[in-house]
Length: 345
Ligand code: ADE
Ligand code: ZN
View 1 (spheres, rainbow, N blue to C red):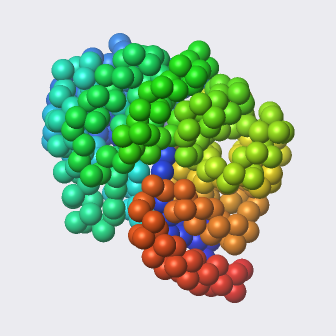
View 2: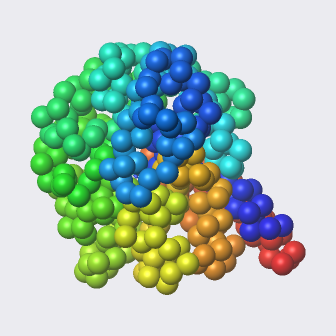
């Protein structure tokens, strides 16, 4: 079996996937036309999926958001995103979405939830894939708008909504001002995470841990600039949800083949790295391809890849009972896959 076949077969979780970043160019084209969203002059949707930095990417991401308007649109993009996860070998998905970007176009939060949960139901029916939901606050909007965001999330709270995230352009918007908001979310029983150390410094990773109380860090790459923080994170086992393809467009690490690449250094330093796809069609990738990229570029053994897949399950916000059962099943399955792969090599 090829490395690609092996990593596709590995049972995996997807913990760092943005719904609106998971819209294919073809579906974006359909929805933009249906909903009258104007594209930059002379551009086709597929030409838009290329960017050299995070702000440029986020500008296109906002256009995709603008093209998703009714519950049927949300159901469609959710189902298509989850279908691609299932085909990549994911068994469980925690899905971010960006409510503010739809509220800005007059879409009600209840409409978003209705469509997304319908997409969840269809993915469960077609692929047996289980999914949960993480509304994410854009840090660019600041903590006061964040309080209204949290009010909204708490006012309509189906069981699938399990936590909140913090995303968008990191470097100008540090985590510290969100401390009170994240504390309120935790007190209300939500899980909390935050994008940190993607474009921002190692101090943003540390502050997200110490001030926001996150149970995992999304990206986290700049942790490698602070040896003390690396040692602390190795000790605490805090998970880092890393996304290899994203780093090539949004970070200073643009060569996965380089020994200096942050994800490689994080794995070598013994940090609790898990692998995900972030905005897969927008970065030309899939979850299994993200695993294959690190397998090939970092020359990882099948055992290490299996360990990373299990670390993802452990880092998830599944209830402890399900997690324990799945861990036992997946460990046995992974052991068999590793043995088969090794004997064929
Ligand atoms: N939203 C979608 N993808 C993102 C990323 N990589 N960083 C920040 N916000 C995002
Ligand atoms: Zn992200």
